[in-house]
Length: 261
Image (cartoon, rainbow, N blue to C red; front, top):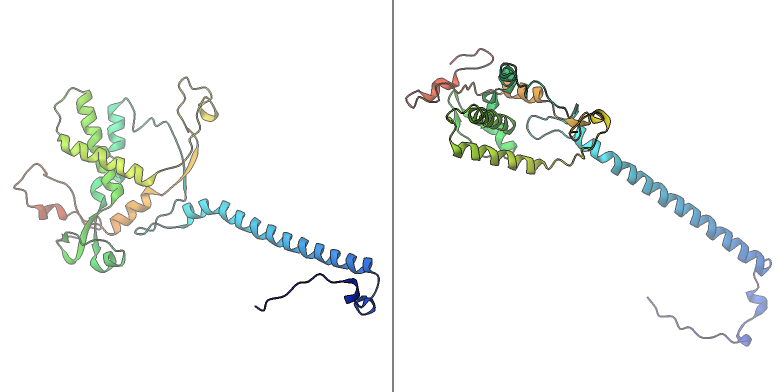
C-alpha cells in the first residue's frame, strides 16, 4: 500500500469555492449521520438474528443428539421416556415375585451372544472375534448391555447367598470383575441427568425422599436391542457349565428361529 503523507492545511491552501458541497454543510452532515445510523441498525439486526438462530440451534442440540442419533451397531435411539421409579417387583421382599421378575426371558444374558459377519464387523471397525461354529465367516460377540445384565444376575445371586447365610457359589474374582465392569460402564456413560432432591413432586409425602422419583428421562428401548440380538443370534445357551467334559459345541444349538445344526 502506498504511503500517504499528511500535513496541516493552511487557510490559503483551500479554494473554498471548489470545496463547497451542494447544499449547506449542516444538510450534508445530517445525511451522513442518517445513512450511518441506518447502516448500523441493519448490521445490528443481522448480528442479533444470526445469534438468535445459533442460540436456538444450541438449545435444540441436546434433544437432537439424544433422540435422533442412532447407536453405531443396532441403531438404537434415545426416544423412550422412562421415569425414575421406586420398584416394587425386582426389589420385592417376596422372593418368588422378585425371582420371577429377574428370570424374565427378556433379561436372559445369553441372548446377547450374537454371530456377526466379518464384513459387517470390519465396516464397524470391530476387532476379530471367536469363530461361529456353524459359519466360519462370522465371529461371536457379546453385546455389552447383556454382559452388564449377566453381571447383575451374578451379583444378585451372590448377595442373596450372603443374606441367606449360604455358601458362595460365585468366585470372588468374578464378582470383582463384574463390579469393575459396571463401574467402567457408569463412568463411560457419565449420565449428567440432574435428579431433584427433597420432599417435592412425587416424593412430597415421603418420610425418606429418594432423588428424582417420577422425573422423566430419555432411554433406549431394551426390547429393540433384544430383537436385534435375536436376529443375529449365536444360538447359545449356558448349559452344563459346571461339567468340564461337556462338549462346548452343544451350547450353540439353541437358535430362536428353530434352525437346527
